[in-house]
Length: 308
Image (tube, rainbow, N blue to C red; front, top):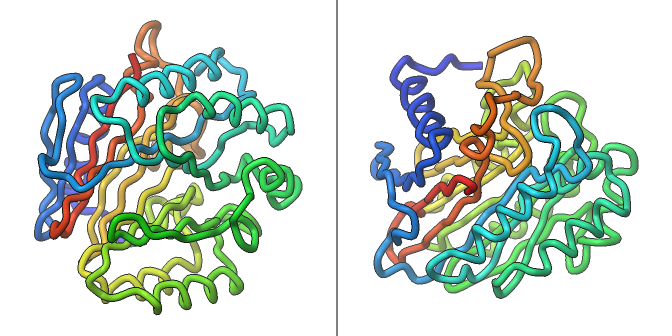
């Protein structure tokens, strides 16, 4: 893996620090330069946005541990946070690890809780915790309607093409898409104009964030090569429970905080494990994400909102 420069590490630490401090952070990228703006609660970003949607991730319903004994409560706080947004999102995407133990009860609990979201549509993709014992069969019985293969799908919304991929099934160490899904992705992107903004949702990052911990996807390079012809391409994921932004050419990557517990920074320890924060600080490491699209802009405006 290519080692990040000290400037990249400093930027990542800054992004993580501002999120963990409970601020809402708007992240924009122009010409490969990352800019951040700390927002007051309720402040809008991206004036003139054509539409916006919101992301929630890594709720881990069923988890029990000192890092967060009440994951259902913090997930409900995330839902309340989304419902309190100044402008209702046109859809909400949960980017995986809805559950911790892949039980039917946990899947139905997540679905019932998300039914209270004030939005036009609720979308999901599975995480590895949603598919460890059955390749996602129980997940798809509850959330798989309209998807293809092992749960992937695509759709268009107001001039933007969205692609939701599954890279948590058949993995060995890194995330894995597989030949059937790659065929779907090739055909799906081939049908899009190079001027169409593309947004790709995955659970595990599509870039090599930290391979020793499995924070990457082994067959993602082909997908990234397909994205190079588009003027605007954004990849959004969960899994790592913290905020990291990276830009490679025209492709921008955003990882998200979860709603269950934080994980350590890449390389901080032999393996990622839930981080137990001092009393009263957990909520500052959890949050939801508001994402705005402005017609003609090459980058999405991303706002992090910590839980109350």
